[in-house]
Figure 1 (cartoon, one colour):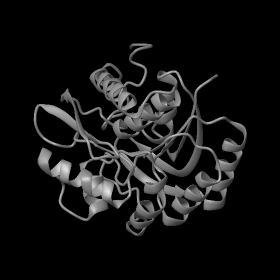
Figure 2 (cartoon, one colour; figure 1 turned 30 degrees about the horizontal axis):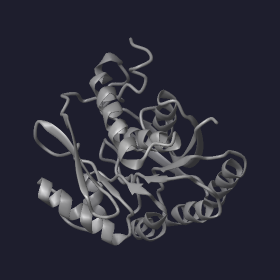
Figure 3 (tube, rainbow, N blue to C red; figure 1 turned 180 degrees about the horizontal axis):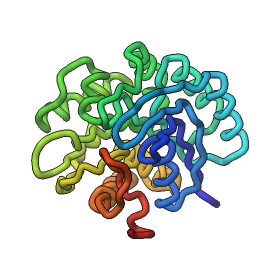
Figure 4 (tube, rainbow, N blue to C red; figure 1 turned 180 degrees about the vertical axis):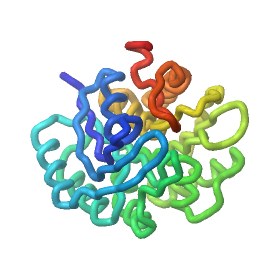
Amino acid sequence: MTAIAVTIAGSDSGGGAGIQADLKTFSANGVFGASVLAALTAQNTRGVTAIHDVPPDFVRAQIDAVYSDLKVNATKIGMLASSPIIEAVAEGLRAHSTGPVVLDPVMVAASGDPLLAESAVASLIGELLPLSDVITPNLHEAARILETEVAASESAMQSQAEQLLRLGARSVLLKGGHGEGADSSDLFLDAAGSATWLRERRIATENTHGTGCTLSSAIAAGLAKGEGLEAAISRAKQYVHGAIAAADEIEIGSGHGPVHHFYKIWSC
């Protein structure tokens, strides 16, 4: 049986993040990828210049079309810019068999451009957290959801991950890539509150566009193939580390370039 994963997210016209990164990640990890576009962005390696939200009823139509035909084994949710779109996605997912759901609460692009309306944060918490098997916020996204300061220590990260569980998340992978220090340390908190730290040496590169999308999609790919959540997260972390390490092998754009999704398959 062919493993199938669906990404529900925004399009990155520059190809480094969003739907494009998700589909590349699914393919690089041996999974067939389908997609539901929730937003279009005019974007490149230097930033986002315009955003066009897909009408909520058309988002729902895409969900119904994909899930009514394909046997979906896992779902990844990325950029959803507004409350009506979030509500349409939640209603659609409740109507279909989705497989495990990975929620990447995309709020700000790597360039600093906002991607989620302030009014939509409550909808994301109320509508999507209960439907998700794991959420994958970075430090800034976690702070925004919790309306607090960005965690500056591992103890603060653990405290915030525990607060996210109490908000309704089933499990949390709090990403520490925006932190300081020689290691990039992520914290996984399962439904029981048991903590696991995943650490990789931090790589000195400016080409990290799309890392969050890529990590959440790699987790979804593992889940689609039947891996347990912890195993899928661990393997995804290793895959992204390799993609970042190989990012300087490709020359894409003049700003923050993308990671190398196909570093195991082809080289430049």
